[in-house]
Image 1 (cartoon, rainbow, N blue to C red):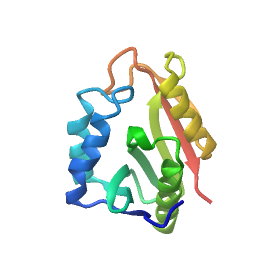
Image 2 (spheres, rainbow, N blue to C red):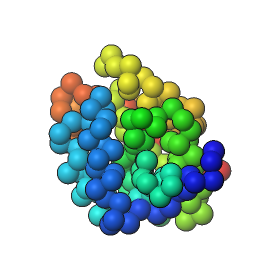
Image 3 (cartoon, helix red, strand yellow):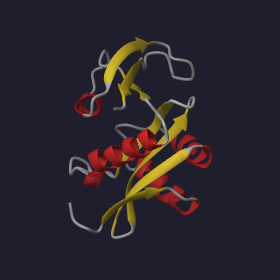
Length: 157
C-alpha cells in the first residue's frame, strides 16, 4: 500500500468526512445513520484511514467493558472499497485494542437471511478477518423489524 496511506485516531475535524462517506454508501446506510455516526464519533473511540491526508475510511469502537469492545461503525468510501483499506484499518485498530487489554471484539451487521449482495460482501469481509457469527436476532432492539442483526465476535490473541 502506498506510503501516503495512514491510520490514526479520529478527531473532531474528521467527523464531517466520515459522515460524507456514510452518505455515499446508500446500499449500506439509511438516512437515520449519518446523525448516529456523528453522535457516536463524539462519544466513542474512532479511527480513520487517510490517503494523502484525506479521510477515505473510518471505524468507531465502543468499549463495552475492560476486555470487550464493539465495532459500532466501519466504512470505506465507495470508490475506495475492495482496495485493502478496510483490512488495513481493521488490522491496525484490532492491534490498538489488543494493546489496551481488549480480548474480544463484537459487531452487528445485517443477517444473511435477508438477500443482499452488498451485505453478503460485508459478512464475508468480517469472516475473512476472523469474526464468527454467533447469533441472529429479529427484531434487535433499536433496529427495524425485518432487519435481523447478525451478531459476530472475534477473540484477539
